[in-house]
Image (cartoon, rainbow, N blue to C red):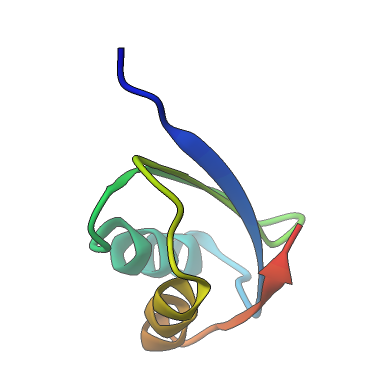
Length: 73
């Protein structure tokens, strides 16, 4: 059985479905990411991955999408 871990990140600046889509697309491209769920109302992005992700890699993906990673929730 595969184990996955879930990490919740807080992202600033997302206001619409396009924002959520951009962040989802960039984070989904990271190796090992299985699923990305964005909650626009809270700015929380739940990432399900095969192993712990480097926060730097997630930060760069969020920056690439045009938003700011505030930290983990």
